[in-house]
Length: 370
Ligand SMILES: C[S@@+](CC[C@H](N)C(=O)[O-])C[C@H]1O[C@@H](n2cnc3c(N)ncnc32)[C@H](O)[C@@H]1O
Image (cartoon, rainbow, N blue to C red; front, side):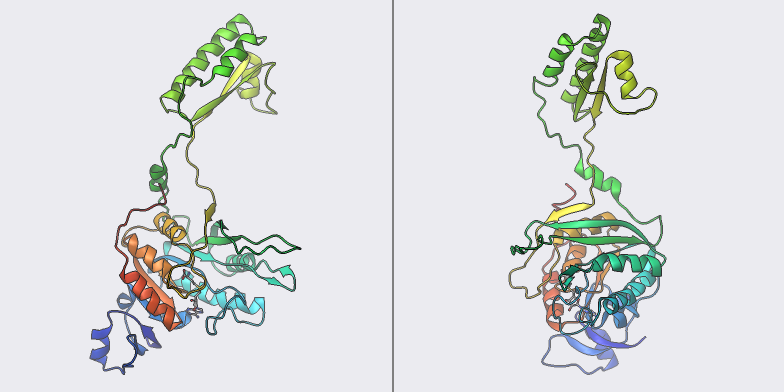
């Protein structure tokens, strides 16, 4: 296959063999790319992503994470984002998405992060229009719309609207058997007890049981079960508990036979165990990042990308970003011992990304998933 573009690493041998012209003043080799998929691995390729993606065979990439230019937000020197209408912009994104679906392995994932835009005072819901169009046009499912809440949005308060401070990361799959390292994630989170098991646990319930209108038999049973549940909290088997006592606490609405309402009627009390299992919500709160010396204006947070790579791929897998920018996806992939392919049209960002990735060590401890 043949296309044009620049490639930033380990191509010397290949190029010299083919006697391709080299632009001497640039450290980046500039030549027509005529290469195998293997050669793209662990490289940043300069060029138009639609062209470069065509070099990649069907069903080969495990995970695609990317953030395309937003509509009419910044000028990256032409290309996607500068279309006249939102419809044209979404059409162009869908062309890239189509290639992503083609090259994605059946158990892989595609994550697209997009921002919205106000036009003539009205929010356009562009990310959601893109997601709906993707679902309509391709054989994919949307697993989550993960909301990135920016803890440091641009500090500019409008007088007639609130400050936008969230963006979605859409997680698409091709197949229900997608790679998802949930058990790993959960085991790394563990049970984090928020309370220290002191001597006062459940004290108020002892007093309430004593002063309640329960029968002597019911009081005895309530005190016994209360003691047992306190032991469970102290030994960290559960996080905490709540107790409802007839005549003191409000009765639950509805319920089934044997449910809380019926326990209250029958025994005079009910105990609700709070197991404290960690839950992973579809919201990530994280600051917008800037990197000293990096000229790229729209870097997404390394920590979010690391979290997604860890959740959605395995060591050795291939992670691709068709809008690589400053190299965040490749940096995260390398750190987590995954292989990467980055495509970026802007030469300056390519060079920056290459330097950034060179300085990354594999297997640095993860601050997320802990
Ligand atoms: C929002 S930025 C990505 C930033 C990146 N996530 C990071 O953390 O640095 C989008 C990037 O896509 C690049 N781009 C735009 N159109 C492109 C195209 N057709 N092919 C390849 N790259 C493109 C832009 O130059 C820009 O750097």
